[in-house]
Structure formats: C-alpha cells, structure tokens
Image (tube, rainbow, N blue to C red; front, side, top):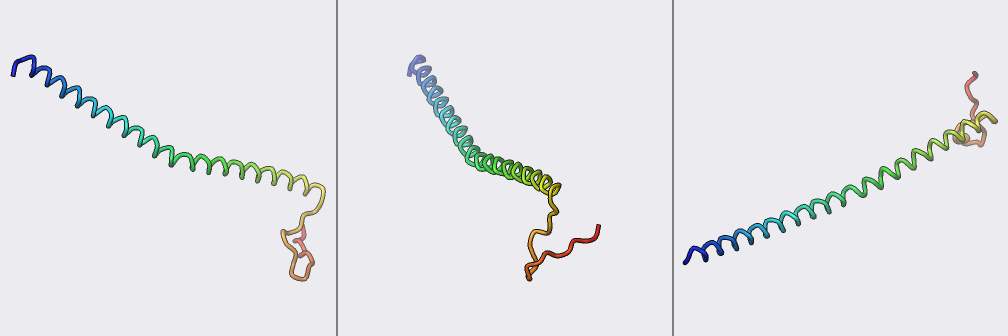
Length: 90
C-alpha cells in the first residue's frame, strides 16, 4: 500500500473511533441524567408536600392560640361517660 492509502486508512480509523467514543459518552451522560431526574423528582415532591404540611400545622397552631385566648380548651377527647375530665388546678 502506498503512503497516502495508509494515511487515509489511519485517518478513517481514528475518525470512526472518535465518533463511536463520542456517541457512547453522550449516551452515558443522557442515561445518567435520566436516572438522576427519576430519583430527584419524587424527592422534590416529598419536600414540597412536607413544607405544605408544616405550613398547615403552623397555621393550625396559630388558630388554636387565638381560640385559647377566647375560650378554655379541654383535652382532645371526652371521657367514656361523655364528661370532660377535670383539668389540674392552676
């Protein structure tokens, strides 16, 4: 084979090898990003739901404080006979 033919063959092999490597690298990066998003999105939904629940709890506590300033608040449930248990003497 002539020198030019060998150079052309070497260039074609190098170009093909680089193309295969670049495509493999690109596909691996896309796969990693897809997996990352698959695991990250549920986590974001969980933290958003948690923040919402914490905000609702904070608002509920504020409402309870306002209510307690107006009226005495007993325990959460009545006794079995339907009466409220006595609160400890203050």
